[in-house]
Image 1 (tube, one colour):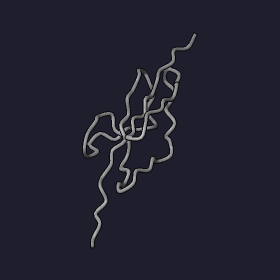
Image 2: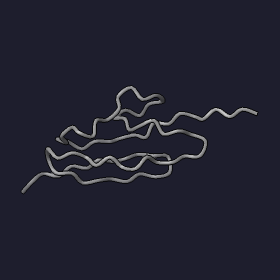
Image 3: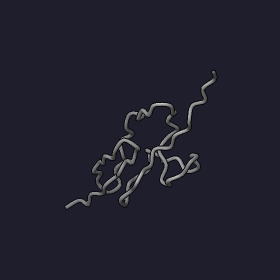
Length: 77
């Protein structure tokens, strides 16, 4: 039996997950939308700025939590 792992995508409006077999790759989801923010990418760290963007071509060998990283849009009045 092949091992399966979970990729947990964490965004501010809720989480979702994907099941991936050992040494397969995760599927990059569509960019999420958050009012007043620009999506910067998926990170393996829960951080304010993206310093460790996840590489969707890498083989999955364990459960992974991915966090949506956002930057606030600047509005001028």
